[in-house]
Length: 303
Image (tube, rainbow, N blue to C red; front, side):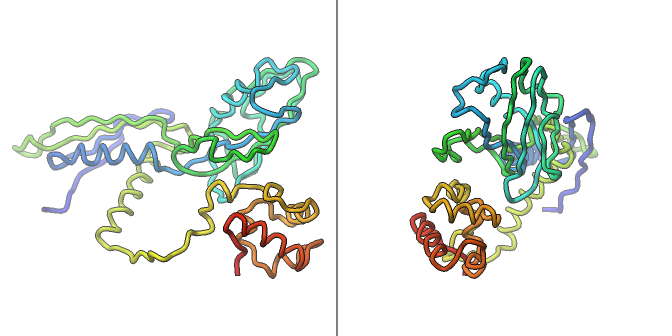
């Protein structure tokens, strides 16, 4: 089979939308490319979302805040609509601290410089005169969908949210016949793509194609898989996101770790024993306590 030669053109483009025409394709390859790209675009592109919220004076999501027109569930649903772009490995911090009367919008979020909001005009809540909203928020990067259950810790006041990381909102494709010379059995792939504004449709299509290319390349030029390779410390799942206060460490030890920048289990397992011993208000005895606490989670410090 000859090497495929076809063109990809943008036939129509608006804000957060583009229509691509990919042609001419050998018969059958319109569906092959269209279905593959659609699946990857909807499930595998990296993105970011708000994952946890802590609101002053609120113990759980089924509460109300004095002076706020919306109940907490409504406020959280609005927060989940905030579309953010962020590519960091660790959770980014955000906050809201506002007194009423005020219409609170996504633009009122105080963000790390590395985080951008794609829909700043989104309304989050209305505060009456005299009311106050103080909230601490975490933003994480990821792909696909992550349910709130993955981040449940039992910590009172910390509310986990369902997170949709995918920056692609919707994908449609259809196949039409097209002519090449006298032949009429070629495919024309028409692909429509909507994004949430954190990435352009063109970049989304390019990233999806790169992901597919990486998978196919592993078939053509396979890299050796080390079957005995241990789970990477970056892939600790929900356990890695537990705070040091949540793994039964003494308050003194937990406070010392937080002040030194070791806030989560993931931070700890990446730390070397020799580094922790030097942390102020810690020592050999405290490090042994930390090792024991990690051992209960079947984890250990780096060598």
